[in-house]
Image (tube, rainbow, N blue to C red; front, side):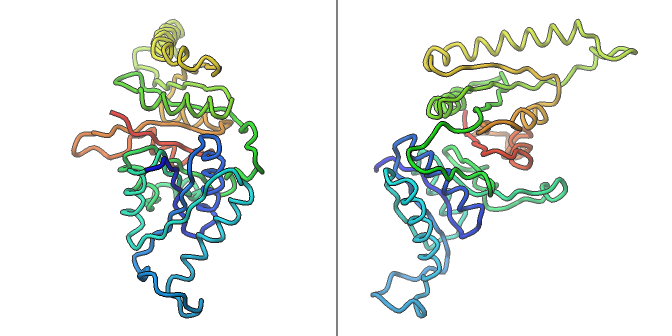
Length: 291
């Protein structure tokens, strides 16, 4: 099967923003762009009928309109439409397994509302076999072809325990494709023993920072050699990892976080950093499953 990048369409502004972002990404990566619309009540394709009696009219229109707009802006990209008679969650998970990347729209929510997200996008992110990118309305890439240098760098969140090759491969590849810097961010809460009556013992925090920076350099070293054209910086923040990552993403063009493929049975499918990023990051967010 030809490599494809799939975007889920439902007619919302969020999904259209995702489609524009996906088209620009497909052009950078020289991939076919597949526009997927899933609806359980899709009828088997009948002979040509009038629009007013075609049960699939609105589904076709969503895909057709998006395809026409994207093809006009990105004539070099092959854009195909795909209508699937299935539940959106099932269809998207299947599409993710067949794609290099899945792109979905994500609603921008307020501080309180964000904890009640629970939509299809979140469920798909938590289970997809391949990277899923969430794009909010208003940040889809709408530039005419050829695709220019993307605004903002790439930020990747690193935990520094366990393998992270899939995560770094995606992050470095994204930065190289955009010709932008990559910033590796690690958050570490200040340990209790660092607190003293007058505040924080800076000797201890400096030791922690230097140790983390050495570990970051060891992890990033091989990837710097593989991607010599990518300018890489690191940021060690002495605060909760979730807060550090969300703050670091404020000026980013793309945030990349990891998701463990195999988590303990009773643990949530998404860790606290991924959850915080989904709810609060304003830039496009890539969630990359890894071992």
